[in-house]
Length: 229
Image 1 (cartoon, rainbow, N blue to C red):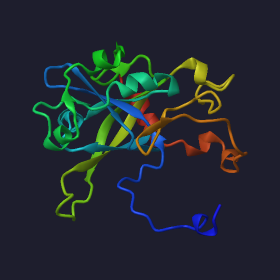
Image 2 (cartoon, one colour):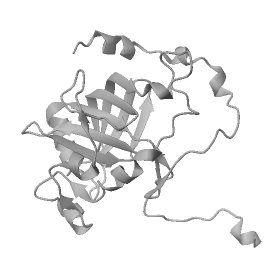
Image 3 (cartoon, rainbow, N blue to C red):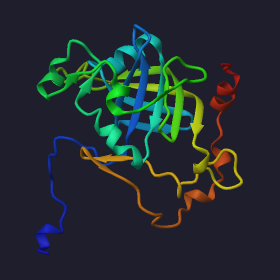
Image 4 (cartoon, helix red, strand yellow):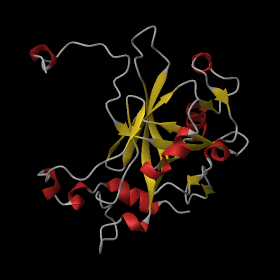
């Protein structure tokens, strides 16, 4: 390898998607049917999840109206179903930016993906039965992205969601533990620069993992327990 190829360079990629888990957001439409949208702009802090959603999307409109959703996490095994949702939208008419990128209107996202609706416990939108992890949540706050930039204002909104229920495939749990997901068993679907990837085996022991998971307990879990179906 030439020396100049090993040096850092200033680059300007159009996107900065270095790798995040794919999630399927289910929300409820005005006619009580379900919408399902794949996104890769999501991260978690305790029992809170932040979702980056296009403001022209049906998911945005549903979240603003109902304040409820299910954050379904597909594993690498569900990649084909997720990909079948690509370039589909529940918004009609199709937003101009999506129309220019080749999106089509699709009112029944579950059918297109070949996925199954499962009833939620405390929110109206359904869960995705095939997803190994399903998180029922409510919107606690919103933040408009790039609101100080004229040409970008109004395109993306971040939703802070508080989790009320965590449904996990029992096969993913640490043996002998009721509430811990085993990272050696959980294989999330990852998107990096618009392409799908999975996780490999653990690379190195983690010093951070010496902190017991219970140390991260917050009062949001108590609040979730208080919500009845």
